[in-house]
Image (cartoon, rainbow, N blue to C red; front, top):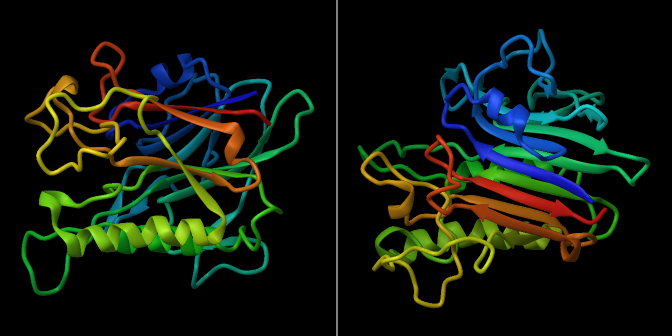
Length: 271
């Protein structure tokens, strides 16, 4: 059994908490570089750039960390216009970090930490959307996914996407968001949540959220407490070949939420 934690740490220095997590592998988003003395294997490795272009460079990025005893092999990554045969070309370096991990002789698993960046249109001030960057991430991952049964991939992180609806129930933006989940499914990446009962649902129920939704809130804004969180922005996908052996849970009860504006996702894989 491989235990994976996915966590947007919100640009906070939470590496000590990451090191204390009882998981084999941790997928991080909006993470600063680790301090000295953290007893973890970390990607990107020392000396590699620690920034994300989202769209201007920031001193935080996605990362993958593994506990001692886990074998971790990095995937070399480069900007698409600079990538060659030896590296995976990505649209925005820093928004995708990949590694192959294994433990105790178990079959290796590829894990991906992803961050869907907000973008703005040219002609509308104040409007932001993330479906475009989410599609870019799927396009980057397509280099590893060429069938439904020849890959063992778990993809998790902060997609900044709503699942099954859009803000204020807008059908146009709901369709654009759904196109990401549909494209992932077409590629052979199955949505594994987290969904209720694997996490606490919003109470009171948000008016914009369909009553049939199984979404579990994973993010609260500056005006909310964890108990008042309403939106799920963090999601997990797994290869169709292993999806029935992957379970994702949101650690989103107020007492377990943690110090970030995003809660942690706990993922178990029966490798």
